[in-house]
Image 1 (cartoon, one colour):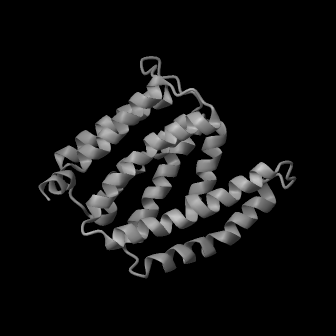
Image 2 (cartoon, helix red, strand yellow):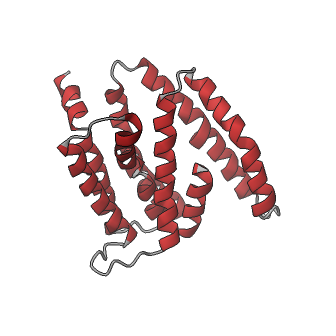
Length: 216
């Protein structure tokens, strides 16, 4: 579900818009942890949500917040929805105590029939270019496979989860660099500004963890 929604969002929006909007999962997971995990939320969490939401508005409207005109309402909705699906996945994943790599294998194995059905009924099965095949292989190996295993291993061997999780905030900025180099999109100032606000909002939520890291 997550990748079906996300890839559709990427087909409707410029990559530089879809990628930061999808990154709001870190904010969504805080909201959902209140009813689902019964976690208490501090003032810094609410402040982080406000700052992050402002960043979403700037990216979605390309900086024209006063006019509030979305570049593509359906694309923006799908990009934000993907963060909801992703956040729900990781919240319920916390309750599953099986081996992490085994869980990853079972998740993809379970999802395969649904992906196959979606492919057979909703996709154009005429392959006109090898680039699509290469892109699919790349996404499967690096976006969904090796990187997930490395991430889970990093969490396992780290002395503190926060020491590893803080590193993920380098990825959206690297993504913008890759989007510029490989996709050729001109990166808008509104995208950079909105992304900075989203990351700032997440870091505000992580204030206690960051403080502990610097103490160490």
